[in-house]
Amino acid sequence: MKAVLCREYGPPSALSVEHVADPVPGPGQILLRVEACGVNFPDTLIIQGKYQQKPPMPFVPGGEVCGVVTALGEGVSAPAIGTRVAAVITHGGFAEQAAVDAAKAVPVPEGVAPDAAASLGLAYGTVLHALEDRGALKPGEVLLVLGASGGVGMAAIQIGRLLGARVIAAASSAEKLEACRAIGADGLIDYSAENWRDQLRALTGGKGPDVIFDPVGGPYSEPALRSIAWRGRYLVVGFAAGDIPRIPLNLVLLKNCAVTGVFYGDYARREPESNRAMLSRLFGWVAEGRLRPAISRSFPLEQASEALEMLAGRQATGKLVLVTHAAEAPPR
Ligand SMILES: NC(=O)c1ccc[n+]([C@@H]2O[C@H](COP(=O)([O-])OP(=O)(O)OC[C@H]3O[C@@H](n4cnc5c(N)ncnc54)[C@H](OP(=O)(O)O)[C@@H]3O)[C@@H](O)[C@H]2O)c1
Image 1 (cartoon, rainbow, N blue to C red):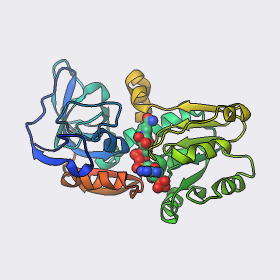
Image 2: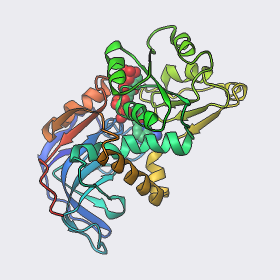
Image 3: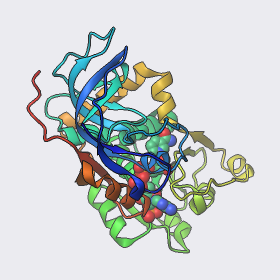
Image 4: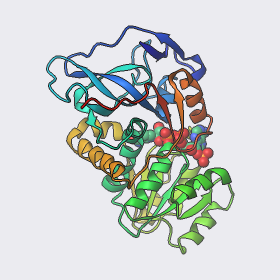
């Protein structure tokens, strides 16, 4: 099969597209004919050896797949061959076929396209877990989303709105903010401007946001936390800016607020049943037309490096997806 290979740690340009042996599903695994694979910031980290997990070399990156089951490994009776499923995995998705743990596979309902299914698990799963489970976001509250034009950020705008919040999007350019407005943000802040805390104060009537969703870190976190509302919840999601901020703890005391970590990958591993239920809810929202994943661009497998360079170079808006095989009507 054709696959994108990481043979040594380095930038996306160091990846190669090669013909390799077809994967064989091990005990507890299923084999997928991959139709689409989401591209996510952690993919840019894993190929540089900067991610928590370090697969043995050479490895195939790609952590979020949708495909049709073509074979079952030992001890697996479901999902049945022919079922279209999606799964969040650590790596292995940028390929024509992938062997994934059956326990991670969630059936994709009728009416959800493979590229949408391959975009939901990581970004939208992280966001729903963060906002609802960790942040206790309530209808009518104000949600501030940092890095709002990115894959996870746009998901936070959409899901924040679905949960009934008023969503303020913060991003670094007028173009990115326009994309946030188009997807439903109620308020916009250019956080590359010096006075962005004043803009935030004005947009919240001086009160500050109730919940802050932060996938960026770097220079934005401390000013954002200083602006949070009384009894606010600050969600630590990621550090796309590179630097991990050190925050003076008195800020947390002064606002009577909570600073809460979000680690979706471990949540999915440690609490698989609640994760599967949450993913089924997300798929249901897509099937009902209430949620449409914010895919801005699709690439063929051969252009995986370009897609990863766009993400790492801060040029992407919304989700990027690799489309591997044209979707066939699933032989259910
Ligand atoms: N905790 C979890 O469980 C979990 C799960 C999934 C993802 N994440 C993390 O969430 C973060 C966002 O992921 P994503 O897939 O949404 O990435 P993305 O699409 O690349 O979005 C990241 C956003 O961060 C901003 N940014 C600021 N400085 C940047 C820099 N130096 N390089 C790149 N982007 C920069 C960019 O917006 P502006 O240009 O507007 O600033 C960009 O839109 C990553 O750190 C990822 O590891 C965490």
